[in-house]
Image 1: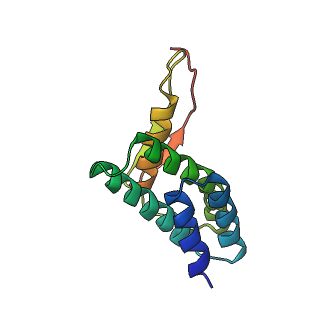
Image 2: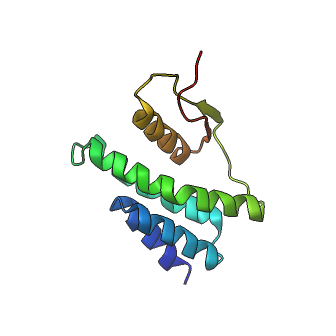
Length: 131
């Protein structure tokens, strides 16, 4: 039973489907799937897309689409991590943001997604911060 939500969550990210990713994240929570395993499924999906990008089989829009789908599911899973008190090992803490007038919010979002997938705890401050 727990395998279905995780496989579908992974597939949704790999197919860049933000609505399905959020839906399968909610279904995983409802099915009492270990939230760490859900994070692992998201991580595996984004890594596979990243590997395809690295091999030249996928392009930047593919990476952005997968990152968007992962970002749609992540808050749902993160909330369950907090609720259950589950702890994830982290490689470190990263704080990210963009300054006022910077147009690189897409790149920042992708970097945050990839760092999260890589095991970092990421605090995304958003954008438009004045120095």
